[in-house]
Image (tube, rainbow, N blue to C red; front, side, top):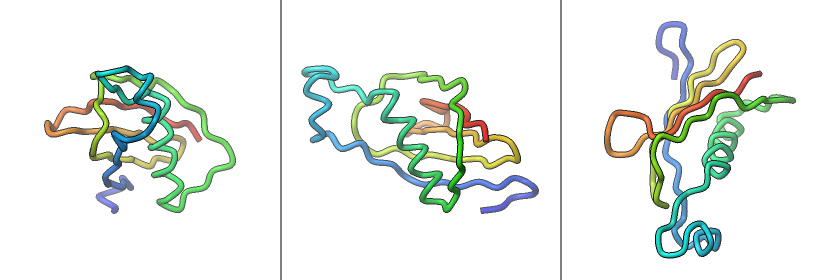
Length: 101
């Protein structure tokens, strides 16, 4: 989607509660690991058709513990970076960060 000069993509990502990782992270109170959140953003970038040779992860912030389930994301594509945000029910982001191109 293009709005003004800003290119962005919005979608959903599902962290499957049945994934075996949650037996250890953490038993009885599953939390989505930050590495899985970053990987989900990377997969969304590739699905959008953007296939860079190199990306650098910068300043990812995980503002809340995330339980497995469905979340909305937004990717904002700039000339030198991609800003990523993950949302739950509320309008404030739960996690956000940047991939440098």
